[in-house]
Length: 83
Image (tube, rainbow, N blue to C red; front, top):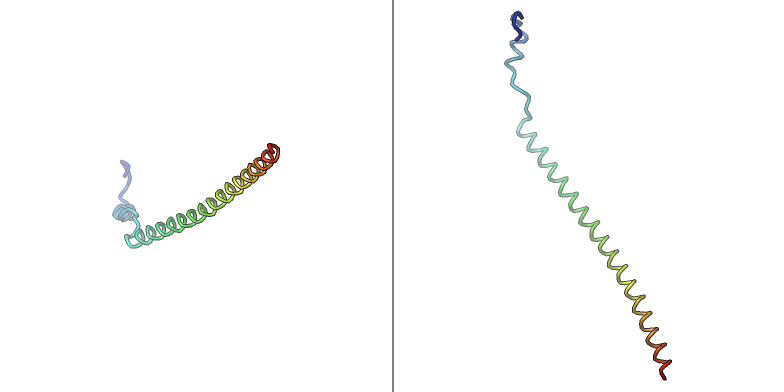
């Protein structure tokens, strides 16, 4: 208290109140819910990553197929010119 302040019973009772702190049960419950949310997010990202990987694989396969078709066509064309 400040010097010169009178003794106030309400201020005295407030000084005896412990500082606010969460109950352990609530803290455990919040921690568990956060861990579950993080696990769901990781699973969702893993699924999304798999779909993206599938798309990249399909695009590479398509490009490779087009390149191979062009190479075979060019080889057949050159083969017919050499005869």
